[in-house]
Image 1 (cartoon, helix red, strand yellow):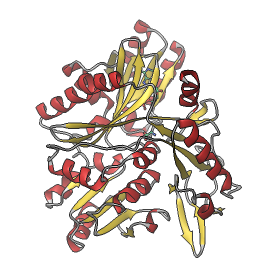
Image 2 (cartoon, protein in one colour; image 1 turned 90 degrees about the vertical axis):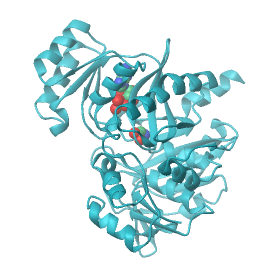
Image 3 (cartoon, rainbow, N blue to C red; image 1 turned 45 degrees about the vertical axis):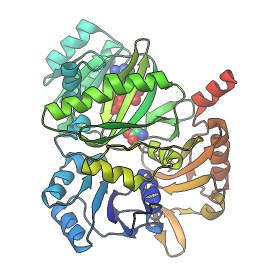
Length: 427
Ligand code: AMP
Ligand code: GLY
């Protein structure tokens, strides 16, 4: 089979690495890719916002399946346009991608299909949103409605903070995304991510993970795309996974089909485990980055076989096999991230650092310059390791990090701390 992968981050390098191992693969193309992806896939020089150009490329190269990594092309309707051109695509169409593209859409779905989530209101003007805050009181959460690259959420500990966030949204602080806000109840509990693979009617549970969104050790500092992740998330017991499938994922699948927009692709549920059980805080319509790097290390089944079955609505008899180990990914970022940072600095020692069989170094923002690998983004590498425990995966990942010679980079030193504590306490 010929496959085109869309995306350029660490998530896509992990997907490319797993797809390239498939016994079904003949040619793997990636657009726009990065220096790491180029080691396992053929670079396709394509503007992925030009859907007609992507479809023409697929025809020319006889591409059998397109796998879309990030959310933006899905929300923009890439899957719709490819399907119209007769090209099988893994990823939801624009109507189904509203699960990530519009927080208000997802909250209304939860209300309609009785899916546990925080109580909420949707507002298109500051005055009524502010009135809701005064009525319900802090702690309370303010969310700009559309895609905001993780920056549209304010967890307000005081009414003043919430009112300021509302004012900022409607004053254009988030661009078009701020034209509507959701204000919701603050939920208390540990967060976990849950991934399911969906074929339009059926959802197969994949795995759990936890990421670390804050930039500094101890979960301090500003939010980022994710500074590290591990899988499985020990907080998610078998019983909680079963409840998540029954109470959240399956009603979502039924609801989406009911509303005429069946969901195909990866459903990534952001959960808070409250005293009552799992509650949905958000959906994403793609793998998490860097959660995907940890998941791909653990996946034993053939990824291409699974995503192909999902795209064709053929889950009948499918199951997913996982390695018994845990996996942990440490993100190395350019100093200054998530603020301003330098590009073009040289990274050395990658080969030696990745020589341990249990370690893979996924590239997120890199480019090749002759023999040299240069940093080319904020999040630059995802150093990922397997281990019998999260603690062992953590030790291996940090040994590899320490073997990388990149003065202008940094990472958190405590990825996986919750799981490592839990392992200590249950031993
Ligand atoms: P989101 O972009 O919706 O994932 O929100 C970003 C972060 O805000 C989440 O990872 C949570 O830490 C926090 N958050 C979002 N919604 C809530 C909520 N209702 N209660 C408590 N924390 C929340
Ligand atoms: N790591 C969080 C995300 O991919 O949204």
